[in-house]
Structure formats: structure tokens, C-alpha cells
Image 1 (cartoon, rainbow, N blue to C red):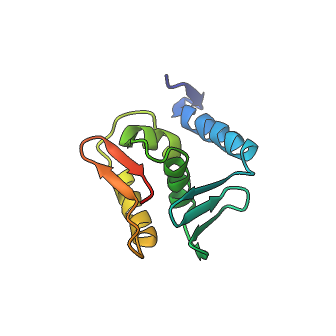
Image 2: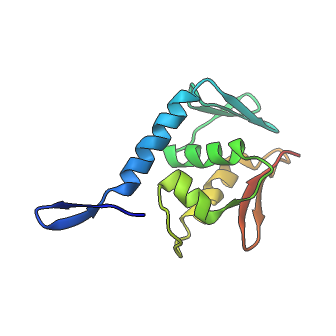
Length: 130
């Protein structure tokens, strides 16, 4: 549930900031992990993504979205779950931000016959290797 902080009479939602800080702390504790999915490797300690051996330049949000997908590969991740884990939003919304960032990732990672980011219609997305 959302907590509010009143600063000079104006209520501000503080929960998403706490969620982001908690997620950052969790990511630091698992910083030595390298994840693989087909030609993609994600080295979390170096914050580096490669396609085969070529470094792929991702924005921080693209990186965090790929991290969630690769940590949960072959499992469907709902848009709501991704909004929560990547953006810290814990409510259903009509935003298409997840679709937009999935599109960005596909443009950068779908090549050389690899198309591992799958849409599960009406549910969400999953990352699978071929």
C-alpha cells in the first residue's frame, strides 16, 4: 500500500522511491552474476551486455528490463510485474512504456536469426533462447 509524506501541506508518494532503493540493494548483492540466453550475455558486475562477443549499448532502463527478462527466461513476465520490477510502479495502468522498451531491446538484440523476446498476447513477455 502506498504511504504518503506531507511536506509543507503537500502530500508526496514515497513508496516507489523506497522500492527502487530496495531493488538497487538487491542488485548489488548479486553483482557477480553473468546470465546467458542464446547469443546474449549480461554481466551484472560490469553492467555489460554482449551479443556474441560484441558489446551492446543499452540505456539504464533497457538494461534493467533485460536483466528482469534474462533472470526469468522462459517464464512469462506480465506487463504489471515488469512495471513493478523495472519502474517501481505497483498499479495497473494503460501505459505502453513496457511495450516501448521491449521494442527498443528487440531493435538492439534481434539479429543474426535471434528473436528471443517473445510476446505472449494479452499477458506479457518472455525471453527464450533458440
